[in-house]
Image (cartoon, rainbow, N blue to C red; front, side, top):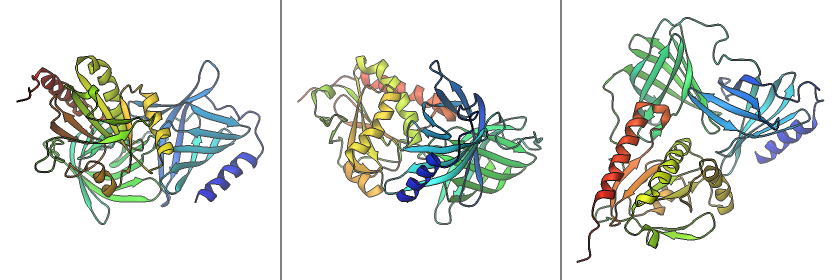
Length: 415
């Protein structure tokens, strides 16, 4: 597969003749589509602007989110767009005003590519002509996803204005982030692209039911889904999904930071501190949302007796590759706490080996809160990011209140 990707890159660089008017990408909103193996197109939009140096920058649009992409190279009629995280990139070539090529995602042992097309001056996402919605799905929905082997319970929360639709799905291990789409007649469409996720949700609305749902993820993953309107739908408590093994009270680890300095909870800087341990991966969009939150939180609380340390579980055990990916998170969000390389991947067996005092690590991110006496008080699985609206606001309020309560507790004195 890597040989094939090399051929793609070579052909984009050296075939075709440059159109003199096409080598400067046009400012404004573009529409892009990624083609799945089944032939379905996953659409998204991005806004292109040129900075003060006349360099192109992209803001990928998903609902209220604008994800900045500023690593763009134009060489003759070829375009190279490197995503800021998640080890993925676009390679393409101008054909008139449009760009055609491939989105390439670099996984642990292979590369996966999807054909893409991007066209300028195109503001619509799913329908060029506005189609009237005959249903309104605003509210909360109890949803079930099934891939033929397993099923997943989720909650869909949507806001519909006229035929424009935004929202997300919440699960026990995190949310599907910012989704955007439309309701056309009784048909339901949502999509997103953030450099890791390439998602498309379709379905048919019939009163308080959504049926015939299909969820397309990346090149070839397809699940069926259905939902029923349910304003009382809930998920299990995120603090109940992982715990310490019986008899355990403390967390223990020793892993290198990005400078290869080994960091342990036994280090003096953690003494008499409330410690937040973040389990993350640079491949994980929910981890991106949590990192942004924790980076800002740490700046407010590091002088109040709080320390944060992140343990990264990457796609491979290659330290330098992991460091490169994690550093992008650190730089983009100005992370001032240590990020450690566990040398473990996100595969279940390896991630559970990293912290054997836990009964399991169900998903990423997972956040462990330790009091000033070094005892684990809470373990939170997943993260409901800003795309979940009120859930994110409530989490921030509850989390902040709990940390303040731990800071107010007296430290136990040795007997």
